[in-house]
Length: 417
Ligand SMILES: *Cc1c(COP(=O)(O)O)cnc(C)c1O
Image 1 (tube, rainbow, N blue to C red):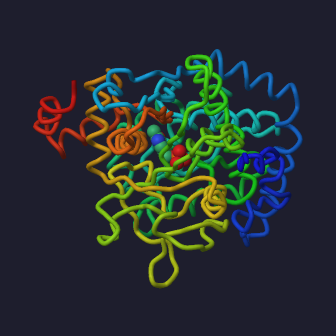
Image 2 (cartoon, rainbow, N blue to C red):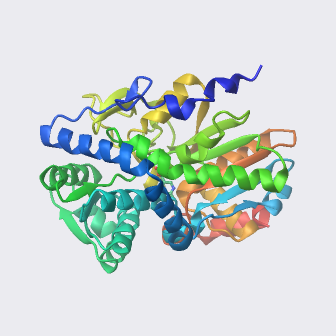
């Protein structure tokens, strides 16, 4: 009867030794130096990170530096306003640096320390991953090189200042379109030259093996805590668990602890301005299978099979591929993937802010918007747990500039309180 029983050994079964989640994932890198570097990385992860010493130190960091556990909060007023659905949020906005990204950056930094490395290398687009990694580097007293396209550096000046203040070196990338794609190439190049002293730290649950596995394991703390907190508060499991999917790290961390439970799981992709416009970043909903950045998954490609130009008003969600575990979970039918538009996300952002006193990131607002849609459509009492991946302070200038305070006023009349 319980169809979820099949998932009892899920974490043991996936990924396999080569880093495959079913047909997705793997390691398709060609540079022999990088292949060597990633093998060392995977070995390090499989041995060191499973030791009790490593686990104990990471637990200490989570508690005393990051401020974990973060709360799970019942949005009573928002729920009452919408009807019968009870909405709960896992407060990753209260994790140090204001989002879930630090969960895997601290794990990666700790692994670097145990592997005897002295430097952390990464690229960043909007700068959120760069800030989280620079924070980890400062904690561990390591050097930190963040590769960032010149165009992105100009757009995200406050995050550039943050990284520098945290002691990182921000390396401007001047090739091509001078944005994320070129920054990824530059960071990989640096890693293949420096891997004896440095490790590369990815920003999401994607990339070649062992990244999808490692990032999932480091993010699992979110779902583990939320599951326990939810049961403690309500005496039962949530009916549904919802999270936004960019590359997929906050979502996979929230999902896997519920994988063998009788709980519906929904990943929310950025629908942007809609499917027809091409201005979206819904890799699973609108994409197809393909290899990109060294792993196989669903991707949005142009006519030549190259990564497509993608768009979302949430800069943390505009990635043309997605973590391979999500691709497998989609094919298995265990997780459902839906889209939410730019505007729905902004509406959700204003509602939570005015109703509950929590300003969510636009990324997280996509997940919340889906829960709000459920609350309006489902005519029976049920509970929905939303992973609130980050805080929205970084987005306020953009949102008010683009949508105006009138939007907030309109919300105020009808919806806010
Ligand atoms: C980066 C980011 C995301 C998207 O990344 P995932 O790897 O899909 O979780 C979501 N929310 C916030 C707040 C982010 O900073």
